[in-house]
Image (tube, rainbow, N blue to C red; front, top):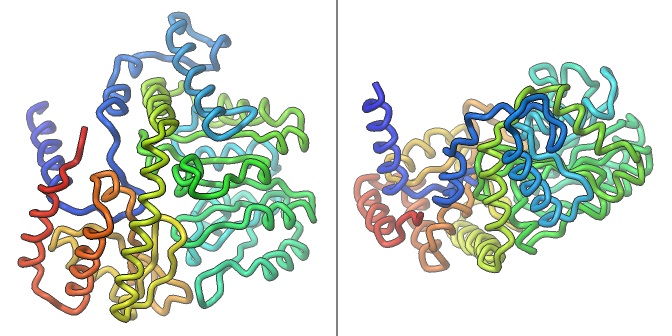
Length: 404
């Protein structure tokens, strides 16, 4: 049985090596990150926090977790950090559990506009089931209308506002979000899961001066493992001096048991890599590549939303997103079908694609490669044969192998 699983892992390695990953939320973690993730730290139970555990044998993991906390605080400018959440969804659940009561009003971006399920999507998520949800959308151009948001918040008076996205190709105005939150005394939570690396890389403004809390996953553009963190800002502690303690209690014992210390060690490695100058150069290149790719697609007549960050949305025709995504995959170009602003299709049959540049930038690709990739995407959308393009894709992938 062991051999069967490792054969499948090897098969997946081959798939990744021969294809172009343009899914904005995927990337390639370094060998050091992967080694920490698969280490013996996964054998340990460490319920509690450094220095305050419920098990013996935690002297080493205490140091590991404290180092991850310190690196996270230093990297993002937090005054308090919790690195134990198993995922971004748990992190968002924890901030709600920490400061809200069941039935309180939460405000976030609509999923159809580029928001996330955990930002108050109604009926099917904890954030929409156990809290009253009011949600804002975008304009026809795909941008947030801050005036409309201000009116919504003034009318509904939420206790928490989420500023975060999954498919929004523009920068967020943290200062404006803070002004709107302050107008009703709401907590402002910046979910930077998709742009954390752009923030640490100095490409995007940090929300730390404006938000009370910051949540994020640690994979995606940060190139870490699948984990998450919650950061408390100076502004957050000014609002509530006990906020750090409330966050910690919400994560454990509120929502989770023993932390995954192997994942936390892997996060610490990724935080360390993100502190290096080479990472800042990488973050800049991600945005540059996205801009070139978007311009090339737009110049050929496609409707492109964005881009000011690492991703863009492309209109490929009513309900044709999934069909085009499947044909692109046949050619070795991996994207995801996605709704676009005011989509006439459905989430199962959307009219757009979501495309990003973090992974191909990690492979070392630049402007020339973006132009090539754009031309192949255009050819596929126009109905070109996938086999001829697949050969070109595989040749490009050999030129830019995934580095360990």
